[in-house]
Length: 406
Length: 87
Image 1 (cartoon, rainbow over the protein chains, first blue to last red):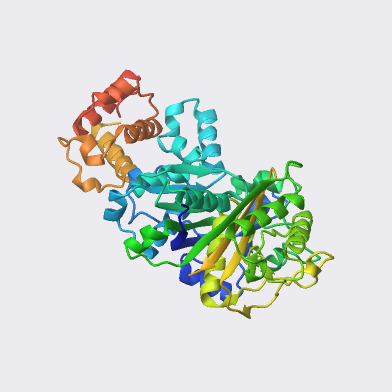
Image 2: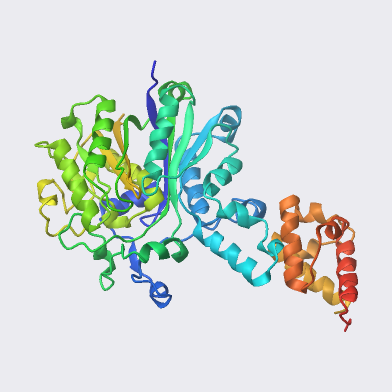
């Protein structure tokens, strides 16, 4: 028999704040985490817009021999996971005595890779790269670091699904628990913010160039959107079987009731309508709910022309006359890419627990498709018990999660 | 470079890289224990010394180094072998 999968803890480190309380306040107040970085422009970026995030100083928490293997995004992930474990009341003794898994979304580690190759080319001596290079450069850097630091003994795997990585990590974690393979899995997503990580993305003209108004640059669903703004950080949720959570007296925050996924099978960067639509329908079907029970949709909408349009079409096809509030928190955070699927579950959870929906910033004029949706541009107070969160990625990978309040 | 200069330069570099208090470095102390050098950190020690002193250091050479004093002597000999004149 399938097991119920609940969320017993959360932690976040993003441009909206360094913990759950700060992020909740920023969501409530409609704060933008976007800035203009002149250094990017000086170095040849088409757009100098980015989310602003301070790399956490972990000198007092982790030894030199632990930190030497951690790139930027692993440090974000450590901060988010430490908060999530505390939030879930999971202490080191319990973790040591149980097989706790780790599934984390990450799809690049550009800066250490570049730095290693730079040293190699300059010195012609691989030893000079040092011991950290290999572990920082690998795509699995976040899971290899966190699993060793927190001494995790369950599944240990990085999920690379482009901008749906974090969402797929939560979805896959829920399946492992639902089918009895794991009792508890730490899931999340991490995203590096350094210029190396997004210079090639900038190179395909995907980023907004509304540089004179950084806070207005990320404008999902708005008629005058001109591209996304890169962001990052890390977000962690603790998934657990209901039985395990009850047994250890853990705080039970919500239940993952649906995970849908699909592939577009078409263009590498241009999303379609059918793929996301199938992902949404699969998640809703698995959740076993009436579509009218969904009170809020956290859209993937990144502020790109085609992506937002096609998601709006898919949402309209799926929801029809039922028009739950739809927003994209990327209007505040920019596109947190590998992290986004996990962070947006947390943003939605904070709103669900707080009885509000954060504004879809900069939604001033709808286009033909977003006009069919219910998109609040101002914060609204609303109690809802079920939300749906979408994440889509390059290559046409789609993930949708349905989560119920408990 | 005199031995004293080597000692000072080495201690500053080790203290910075491995985040230790250099005033606690004792010439007879075991280097690996004092600096918490596992096999990977040992790679960083070699990279650090090569960067600081400009010598190519081979793995087997550093394995022979047990104490801080061994390291200072090793670097002094390396300097001599490399044809550098002690100032």
